[in-house]
Image (spheres, rainbow, N blue to C red):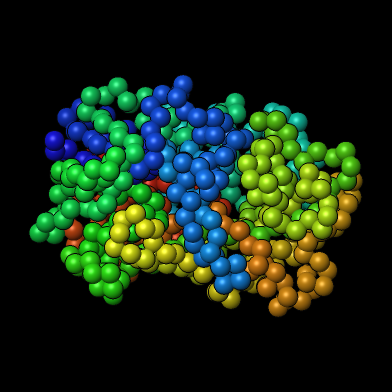
Length: 524
């Protein structure tokens, strides 16, 4: 059978695209997902359904690609969790619905992508969401994805101390970090509803599964895009050990910022040297495929919590974030601080997995941390082919902290977190700082090394098929998400971002990107 549109990847973006395109009964849509598909709520496993049971992140989970990637030379290759299930990352993530900031999208527009200015993307943020707290021109109330600021439950002591410390340090309170002015300390928006993780598969795909023109298939690994005469004509896929082809008028890659460039290269679209190295016939040279790899990094200042103080709460417990501008930075609100326990409510599937941060013999249940996140990194990494075999993951390196400005901002952020711990707000909550030690904190070189040894990574992988004008030789797609040089082929996921959103979150922006691109694909 030939489809009007084949979407490769049933993650957040793919779920949005499939549901929206299927609204036109005359458009046949096939959504292919490598991981399992759970077509109704009753069949969704608990580790996907409930936000506090994220076992899907474990290396042995069938819902995780369990990739291996390098973040710093000191740490080498580490496990990188990526969703391999219907809903993708939205089915295993931390349920953050923090949008990118207005400055992010105006910066994208300034790079030659005028369709992505904040004024043009705001309607699509609104279209995606059902904000349960705020009704104004900046927020939607009729979209599929619920957004709420959890705070009805008891405030954990570490959250109260963090907010108070930020306010006493001169930062403003912010009632809406998804609004026009995101700076300051405010409640983190979430798509967790009564303890349930409201994934894109549940909120977007679920209500549309009855449509006869929408077909969803799990357990299907796409091996490559089929391209004839510079036009995408379908995909080659594998399921149950059988390799087959699917014809389509339009093909959309929504496989994420690791898998989408990987598939392009396997299909003969990408950097010439990599394709030649693995004997892949080059159909169209695009040197930017796999380059411009961005992801948020975080490093954690650990402290012992005094006896009797609460570290976490129930499903409605509040979580604060501080968005601020690094000293001397030309980019507003480029840093994020948060606080959380070292061990949270989830039972540890692998003992020690979430207690890898040195606690110096202190019971992990008595340790919390202030996390310092670099919201807008200057340095980037790359994704490269490791084999012509589609079953072999590509190699990738985030190249964290190699940029001097990145290293400086994180170093200063760690010191700022340590200063917050010394404030009066923490006197009744924090016993003492565990790490980094005073001698490390006082020495730039020692602190830089400690950060590189302890830095962690998010699942906000982006940028590897970035959008850009024809004057940008490293752009992979145009601003309408069309792959340059190949007709009938789009990339719609986090990989098209020129830079990762500085807000410290990516999920809400990915939903917006898909909502934005639907009309362009439908009208082609």
